[in-house]
Figure 1 (tube, rainbow, N blue to C red):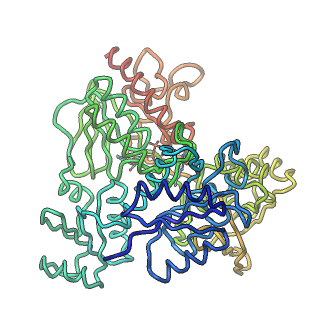
Figure 2 (figure 1 turned 90 degrees about the vertical axis):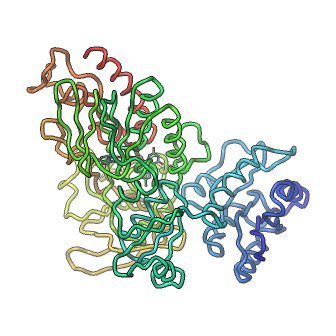
Figure 3 (figure 1 turned 30 degrees about the vertical axis):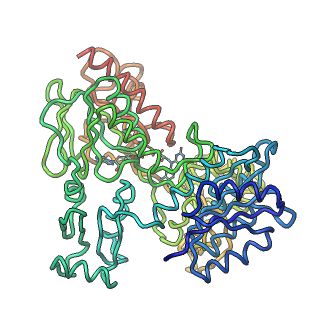
Length: 556
Ligand SMILES: Cc1cc2nc3c(=O)[nH]c(=O)nc-3n(C[C@H](O)[C@H](O)[C@H](O)COP(=O)(O)OP(=O)(O)OC[C@H]3O[C@@H](n4cnc5c(N)ncnc54)[C@H](O)[C@@H]3O)c2cc1C
């Protein structure tokens, strides 16, 4: 029988170590073995031994205050030995707000969470922190029922997409490379040739050969076409804005349908840890947040239609008709466009793997303070990159802006160029393109190419913020829904020209807040021009829009 996974406690004070270990043993034995290390120095030896013995380590709990080095320093090294172990920092009561080293440890992904060490037992707050980490860890390490088995090429883009889709929709699955014994056996049993991959095997015996998203959704019992009746609200996109609109729409008695071609959660669903969402001081995984919101809207009666995108939108009298990929149509009295954006990626897999662990896309404010005294790189030459550089320079020792062009004037406003130039610790490197880089658990190096000479160099780096633009998902909208130069939907007072609605607006009243140039069609979240690109802002707009839709429907 396999040995139980390890919970490792590191604390050099025998009394407090005993309390933590005792609490863990009471709750988690015999499923986990609780092991103690009596110093920060001794822990790496134990971790190496477990690795050599092929023992699974689920969580390392280390006390921050120890005589030989801090818990945060030790936890930063854990993944050298156990790549997937969770890391929980134990702080002492009365420590005050978390000091700089803890904030940095969180921002750089060196720890997963911190919690006050238990003093009076049982300490349910401590146990909740442990249980949440164990639950996340167990999802990928303990045997579980596989609803879906995927056989495919390990490096195939479509196989990767399907795995990502299943993962983001919280469907338990196993992946079996076609070259491995189990993969070959599954194909053989089903009599499927290895030439048409990926192949999906469902728990109920169904086999799908290279299926579309909609075919996968349908086979899993999900709805892939909308109902034929008239809905009150059609929400297009199930990111935070769409999910909030679904919760509020359905809870306020509106018949609400949500259309989502990929996975619930949108961009937020891909974030391993959202740390600035109200009410989650230790952060929350985007997938968890999305799943909670999905269930909440479902409980209120919202309907979900999966697997196909919206491909068109038109008005038929008071009805709004959304055409849906796959050939169906959705009729509704009001529509919320919540299709979000994608941040342009560098497209370098070794760097994208480190998102959140030294590589950051877009948002910078919540990570800036953690950059105190560090060397930081900002990639991009437009205003967003300039603003990020100036903001980061308040904390970082030095900020280097990497710009492809010969001059910042090609993409940045004058006032920002002046600010960048007058900030002592910002340097601009022109003609520099990031072509590679990586690190074991967090960013360690970047490879840069000089566009003029073609030479490349690899430099040490611990933090890089990439701001090379975002694309709004609005190509499917008709031309008469006004958008700005970058494709973001224009709403509310932004549609007014000289105080009056712009040409083409058909009603005597002005457009409402969040309403697009087609009455009854609203936009919420990142897709809207001028929106704040944050989870909380998207949730806020998704909630407000329902109030506006009530007003709109009353007037119709
Ligand atoms: C890696 C990462 C980490 C982030 N971390 C944070 C953070 O820590 N804190 C924070 O505040 N913000 C964070 N953000 C930003 C935040 O996730 C976004 O601001 C937020 O998700 C926007 O929500 P949204 O609903 O407007 O759009 P999105 O999240 O983009 O969701 C849009 C949804 O619409 C769907 N869709 C697209 N086209 C169509 C179509 N034609 N038909 C139907 N559906 C469609 C998409 O599949 C998607 O599910 C992060 C973003 C990323 C990428």
